[in-house]
Amino acid sequence: MCLAVPGKLVRREDGSDPLMGTVNFGGILKNVCLDWIPDVRVGEYVIVHVGFAISKVNESEALQTLQLFKDMQSGSHVSGKSEAVQRKTT
Image (cartoon, rainbow, N blue to C red; front, side, top):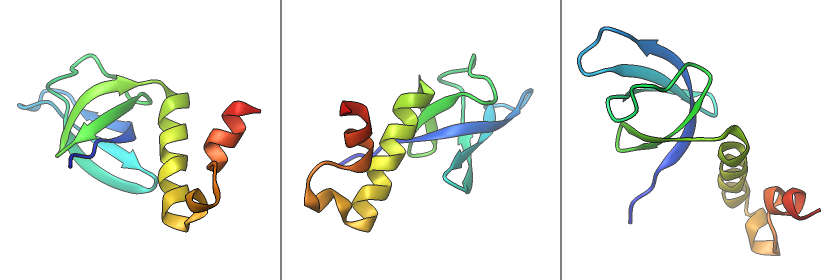
């Protein structure tokens, strides 16, 4: 099973080879390779898989996905719709 996680780009290392940046995953900062999406800008959300930013994602989708992860961690997904899905459907 593969997992790709959204995060917010907080720093670019322009001039590095490969192009690298720092992505914030809910308070956890990780260095990731940006070579596959070199046009990404600080403040944008990216999908990261095994250390590589593989695509951009809009903020709304990223935040909804992150909320679903939180819901799964807390167990609230077991009781039915997650908080993120409930907000979207109301």
